[in-house]
Picture (cartoon, rainbow, N blue to C red):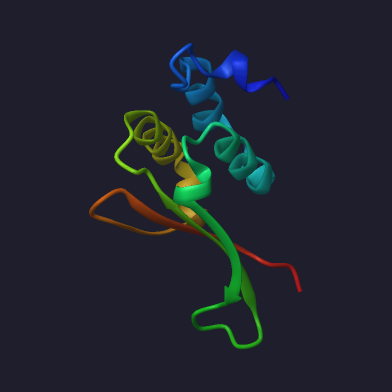
Length: 111
């Protein structure tokens, strides 16, 4: 994988190359997709939480949830927009979004 310096501009915003990678990422590598995005996320210590939680309706199953908030930063908003343009990823892993730039995605845990 390339380093952040190659995929963030001098002000810390994601480059077009970064956004294109997010848009075109293969759905078979979803965990790596989220890792890549987190590496390019502004303030992940504040706006990024991951946790394993019970599945909402499948008993004895868990999911890995990503609680992601943009903090209103336009670079993070650009990343979210790129994520939404990866239609396969969005349709499989997006759970919820709400006003204020808050998003929830989840991956089924293998059990």
